[in-house]
Length: 314
Image (cartoon, rainbow, N blue to C red; front, top):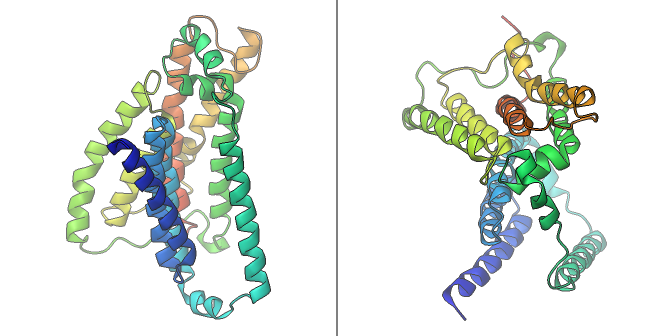
């Protein structure tokens, strides 16, 4: 057994152990911490599977943003945690849940173990038309060209999620500000981190979006990094979140899907079908869509994490 194989086996066992600990943890906060650690370990697994795009998304969304959302939920639900913990399900219900989990795990294992070798793949077809699109990354081609309609709807779902979160605000707070008020003195270490990281994060995010046409990266990864930088600044209380009634914020939220839709409708007039790119214009249009999608993602994710407005508009 080589060193790499030993590390892979160790990583697999560690993923299973953290997953089990996350399920068995009695406190909600401990479960969330386990979930975040589990997501980071899965990112390493995707790297070992040479799926760097998926690893970046898992680290940014599956572990990062989702982890912050769960921590916020735990804080809001802390008063109900003790009564909920006292209501333990019966033995029969726990046995049924364990049996169902075992059946699902066995079915997934069977699917993986019984796959043909080599497995079925559409990779050759995905790479066949990269030259026509002007991109070198087949993942970008799949997301923005081959299944672009699905990608556009995914961003629309994010906007609907933000609207759903905002709808939880009381009538008096509608249009106001969410999140804690800025303190008189920002917290020292966190404030230093919030001043140090964002310039570096912005450069990294722009680089990831720009190289996404030919290398691992893209709008979702770059937008998630920008969102993380915004959340760090807000957590350090260097500034407050904007009022949700601000026009520039609402334009930023819809910019990506709107540009995506405009380009798609323009396809009827030139190439002759929805979301089709004119010959020679595919890469510029893809980069245009990616740029505005990055803006929308960077605006959407912090709004989801901050939650509904809890202060009336000024």
